[in-house]
Length: 218
Ligand SMILES: Cc1cc2nc3c(=O)[nH]c(=O)nc-3n(C[C@H](O)[C@H](O)[C@H](O)COP(=O)(O)O)c2cc1C
Image (cartoon, rainbow, N blue to C red; front, side):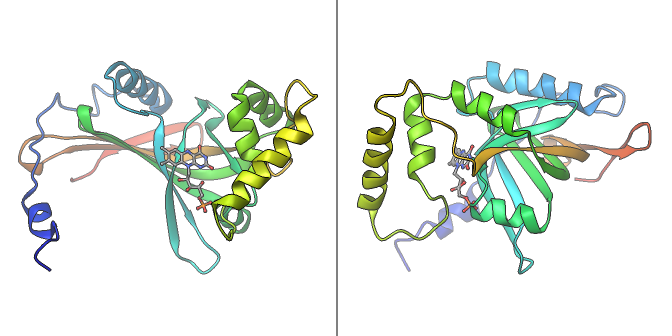
C-alpha cells in the first residue's frame, strides 16, 4: 500500500529530556502532585489539558477507551460527566472500575489513575448541568449517546424537539440519564519523559491510612 504513512510512522521519534521526577521531589500526596501538573498543563497552552482517556471494561471483558473531559477533582476523586445509558455507562454498571490516562505532550508527561467509580449525587449532576451552555444542555437531551441512529437528521429532529419543548423555560432540565461519575483513586502513576527512553515513573498506591510510593522501570 504505497500511499499509506506506515513507513513514516515507524520513523517518528521524539527525544525526551526534562527535569527528573524522583521519590524525593514528588509531592507526598498524589492529589497535590496532580494539581501541580494540571496547573502547569493549563499554563502551557495545551489544547484541552483536561481531556483524558477513560478506560472501562465491557461486559464481554474487552477494555474500552475513549476521551472524556475531567470536570473536577478533589479528595473525593476525579469527576467527569456523560450519558449513563452510553456504552461507558453500561460498562460501569457491570464493573464500576476505571482508569484515566492524561498525556500532556508539551510537558512530556503522562498520568494514569485507576480506581473505583461511583455516580455523583443527582443534586451535584443537576448543579453542573445548570452551569453548562444551553447548546450543550440541548445536545445532551438530543443525543441518545452510543445508540445506533439512522442518520444525522435524527439528531437534528431531536434537537428541534428539545428546543420546542424548552422554548418557554429559562433552562432545560437535566435528563435523569445524564450525570457525573467520580473515580476514587487507588493507584496514581506519574510519568516524566527522560533521555534514552529511561523515563521516570513514580507510582502511588493507596494503603490503609495513606499512600505508598515506588519507582517503576520505564
Ligand atoms: C476532546 C473530547 C472530549 C470529550 N468529552 C466527553 C465527555 O466529557 N463526556 C462524554 O460523554 N463524551 C465525551 N467525548 C466523546 C467520547 O469520546 C465518546 O465518543 C462518547 O462518550 C461515547 O462513548 P461510549 O460509546 O464509549 O460510551 C469527548 C470526545 C473528545 C474527542
